[in-house]
Image 1 (cartoon, rainbow, N blue to C red):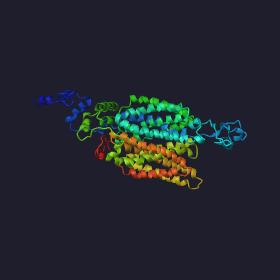
Image 2 (spheres, rainbow, N blue to C red):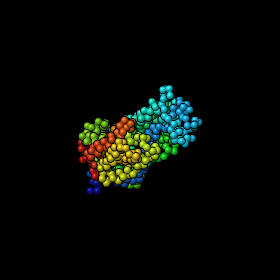
Image 3 (cartoon, rainbow, N blue to C red):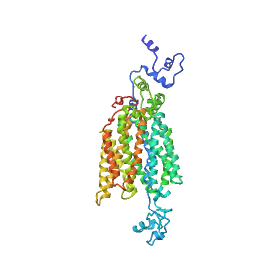
Image 4 (cartoon, one colour):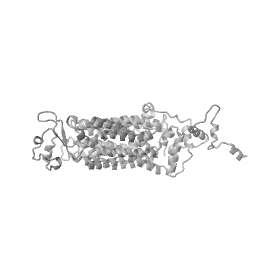
Length: 554
């Protein structure tokens, strides 16, 4: 009798249960509603982190995803990091001045490559902006051993301001892109704007390559900034939403940018030509557009948006790739369809200030992200002012980030994300103070000491990027994660616009850039200490008045 009664009870996986969800006048519910009805009698529920844990935590799928996304960052790193190379000023002379007047060492028919006398070389490349008559020079000759946009568009003398303006326009493009993509990826998903970034880079690097004047080049670089922001505002989240806490810090803080910039320095040193570098970036971006067919949408975003059917398909993909058996997906639906969970909404950047929980984390993060942009791009753009070989300095700045970033990967899972950021900014603070003071001390080791502590300050701020990004990803809920991340990225780009200006102001106030950097690092330390720690905790998916109540320890 009991067996017969059990047979008459509707089973949770019985297709016939669909009929029970209909009443007269209703139409058949869609797949997501059917899945919701399936879980009405299920007692235990699962969160996305539980699903990831049962699928291996960090399996083959997560490793492949991280490798692909980190390699995609190469074209973005080369596009952004090329500013210092593109803006490098080769040796030049006014071609309107006859060689006999300009260069009187007896080598009138020689070029730079044939000159072996250092004094003669300096006389030849005298960098004069005016003719002996007082008129402005109209034509310029540059050394042939290196080709940058300065030599391409004659950006010297009364056009010397153009290079800094182009870089600032690119940073403004990144600000615009970060603001736009934050909203797009929270509304339409991570995948579309993420892959679109590669298409944007292809199109507007082509515009730069075929530029006939610096204005056309500047427009192209503006949209290169937009495309770069699309990628940089999402790539941490794309990886982080598929990882558990102990692996999240590794994939986000992995020093791929530093490795790729070391490679960029090597290739730039071999080619010595901005146009060939641009062609390589175009080729790489075009090839990476094919990742559309391999990278799935974030299943955590799909769940948070109640798109359970699509999320279930992604989970099946993980199950197949990781060779693990996924738990009953109906259990995860229950966690997002009970009465205690708020409905999914589309949020603007205003929610970061209207919601009290988000406001408490957004205000301290503002200072930290602004500092990251200002210090990183300020010191980075000032590389060309350091003593020694330009390419060697650029290489050292890049390679020193590798050990510092690697150390932070370990520290984030030992002392936490928050205190790793504090430690990194402390190094930056000390380095900035020392370099600033050295500018006012007369010592024969001034150049070496300045370079050394500037490298320390740069390594400190580079080390802070990874844990700051990890902390930001883990603090914001899924439904507003890219909105918050994108908004803070806007502030980092604002800092990147301001930072290079201090390089020029140092001609009037020596050490100003480093005193400002030290001050910003000190303020960031105080602000970060006000934030909660997220080490070994799960991500939050829905937005509530008290976010920390949703956070659980793994």
